[in-house]
Image 1 (cartoon, one colour):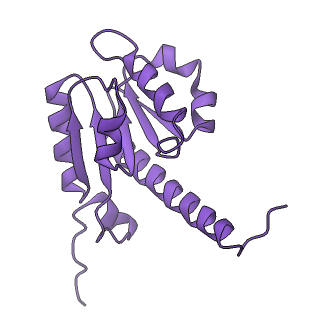
Image 2 (cartoon, helix red, strand yellow; image 1 turned 60 degrees about the horizontal axis):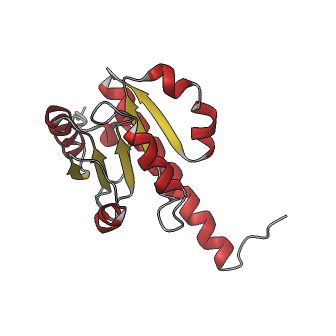
Length: 162
């Protein structure tokens, strides 16, 4: 009987092919949290870009060319993450980038969670379970790939819209 190799990452457990590293932009005002995200996500095979300051202008986000954005809701004691999210979702070229809001401000976010889901935004509460975070990342990236494929088929006329 031969032994199966031990799965080393979350993607390995799910049997996913991660040969093409997905790029994740993490925006948070706490360096320790940024370091944690870098370690967790890099270990899973993702390319991680960190921003420790508020994104006032979206050019930095465009330059990152991220497949996913993980955004803190409260930055420097204010709901700056919410303002950044609004800008992202109201900007045509960035509106389709999936976002995970990772926050301890659960009461504030719960009120708008339904609206967030409609806009391709998932909420992960702090303190978070590592598997929950990695599951959310995987889910959002998979949903994004599915949406891109469907959009491509529509563009090429392979799927009829009702």
